[in-house]
Each structure stands twice: as structure tokens, then as C-alpha cells.
Length: 251
Image 1 (cartoon, rainbow, N blue to C red):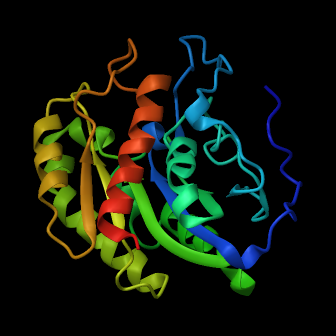
Image 2 (image 1 turned 90 degrees about the horizontal axis):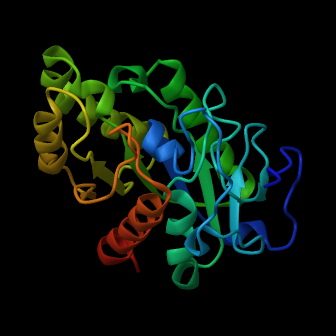
């Protein structure tokens, strides 16, 4: 499958109509669906993840809008092979209600929550990209979709500090984007490898902040690595995220 041209701009619809969503976290948000043991993507795109150039756009690494297509994170999580993630199925599931969707990929595989603290490269890049997405009145940021935590389930210190770090991330991104009520939909990680998975899951499901909801990855099929969601599971997760957004935050 041909990847999107990173210099291509979309001019098929008025920019002011975009409803913008930040996609952030680690590899399961960046997408590993269809990536095999040899780190090659099979190119299979489920119907739920199909492109819609007139209605679904992505902000590329050059901070330009372009038609969105899998793999959404190919030029963001660029040190790894990206495949299908939840972003496109999410966008397809909400576009008829919301109109034109703008996706801002920011996820990077293998990253711990501490790497997303204010001042760190990943956090600052996410805020920069989100701010660029609305420059010139090109749209409104509607929510941040967050899927991360596997890296913090490997040792007790990281697990013990996860709640404090996650809540700080939410407060900081809302403050830095001047969106004090920004909806955050986080994914509670599945039963992946890691001694402290249950502790991380309990924290994620127990975050008690306004406009923060959680969807649970339990039951979504994992690949043989017992870490990454399959292509089909990623498409299902996107629909789950869409259901959560429409139920809690729209209209």
C-alpha cells in the first residue's frame, strides 16, 4: 500500500470544519496491527479503517494536513514499523455525526509515562502538534485518546507512581492547550506481559477527574507477542473509543 505523501495538503473541504482528536500513548495507539515478527506490515486495511479523503485528515510530521490513511503513525513513530491502530476506525465511526475529522498522531512505541511529563520531548512535541492543528482557526480539539501503560507494568516503582504521573499529564495538557475541560478517553491495558499489569489497570479505571473516561482492552485479541493488538482488535477498539466519545461528550 502506498503511504501518504508527507508534503501533500488537503484542500477538498473548508479547514474550519475539522473536529480534531489527539492520538497519543505508546505502540498500541501508534498501531502494530498486521506487523509480523520480521517487522513488516502486511498492508491489510479492514473496511472500518478505510480512508475517506474528504472527511478524515491527519496532521503529518511536517505539521501539514493531508488525507489520512493507515498506518497513521508512520512518520511519527518512525523508528518502529507501524501498522493498523485504532485511529482510522474511530474517525470512520464518528464522522457522520461530527463532520470532518482531524487526527493528530503523537504516539511512540515503548514509552513510559515519565517520558510524557511536561518538559520532556514527547510531551512538548504532542503539545506543539496539537497547537499547530488549530492554527488559523483550522478546527477545534475535541478530545485526547490515550493508550499507554504497558511499559509501566514491568516494575513496582513505575506502577506505584503511575496514578500521580497520569493525573499530572491530564492537568498539564489541559493547561498548556488552554482547554481546561478537554475530554480524555484512556484505554485500560489488556492482560499483557508484566508483573504489575493489574495495578496499572486498576489505576487507569480509577482515575477520577472531570471529563475523563476509560474503555477496557480486556477481551481484545492480542498477537502472539502477548503485547500488541491484532488488526481486527484495533478496528474494534476504534469503535469502542467512538462509542465512548459519542456517549459522554457529544453533542
